[in-house]
Image (cartoon, rainbow, N blue to C red; front, side):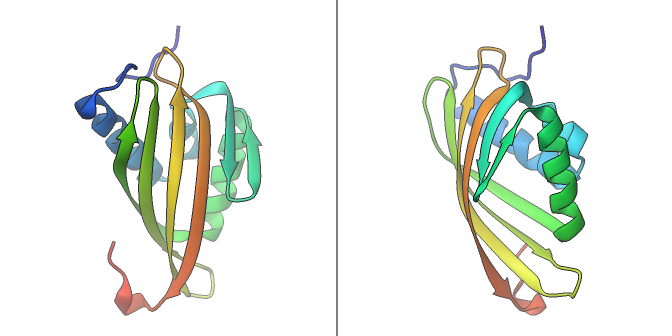
Length: 136
């Protein structure tokens, strides 16, 4: 049986660790690595897109990181319960034309008993910024 530590139920330390592990994985920009934190049949809402299953996660992230260049993400634990975690995040990237953006958002995560994320709901807004205004 596949497991991804730490397992629910979460306390402050284990929820904080789960958030840091997610940040590290996403900053690797390795879609296959990221996908392994999710159930095989994971369900996502990312902005207005719906992603279902690991294969679609890999495809979605591969496309994302071809568009969002020099990607850098910071996540922060916002709240947690037994098998759910809420985070706020921001990330910065530039497009192929060199325009920089900072994206702000919130994610709600739900985990199965093996610590794999079965549901992820993300609300995200982008703000065009100047390169000299970057923080990450």
